[in-house]
Length: 258
Image (cartoon, rainbow, N blue to C red; front, side, top):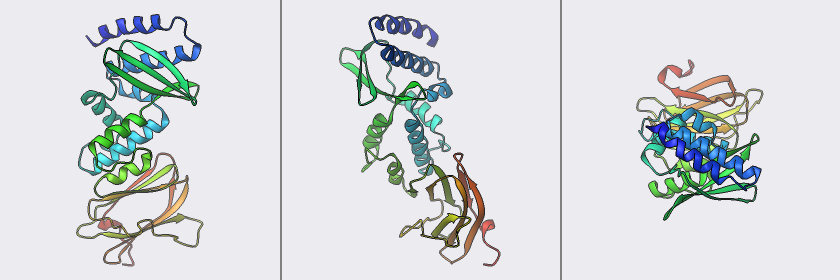
């Protein structure tokens, strides 16, 4: 039944391409592929048609919800599937009305009558990819008080018990799984440094069950935590890359000297 819906959509989209530029046709082709993957619930293929910024934000929001108790297991693809199924985030229409280009981005209008939807596409890796960041920010602003609309990294700070800090591209995430102990200090510095540097928690604390992410550049780091009883927990020479590192801190991680 789902595949039958794709045939008229494909015909309409192809016929609409007559007289359009090559870039416009490429945007329509990307739109059609996204619509097909959404209809067939092929989330892996659908996510490959999304901009890098969209994927990063979906992952961040998934972490936000996971730490707030919603079981997305920190997976942006699971969140995407839920949003597509339960919201009008991707209300794809068979009819493409127009495509305009402004400031290096493509804006596609689709729909009929009063149901008109605008989608933003950006050019990445020689492909036009759907950028859902504006729509995701709008969705979050409606569901969470005080959600910023322009800074994706700051969105996660609206979740209870979650802190995001740093400006790098690789994430080092820490969850406090200590019983009855808060984490008061978090230090992280390159392994070749003689100093621990700043306390990444600042004036904040991580209570039991709470988490934080430090965004760092790729490299080798030493990480040290101190709890409310002044016990320390240290990881030496952690290799951090774009896959990230997730440390669930327990009593078994306590330094032997404590």
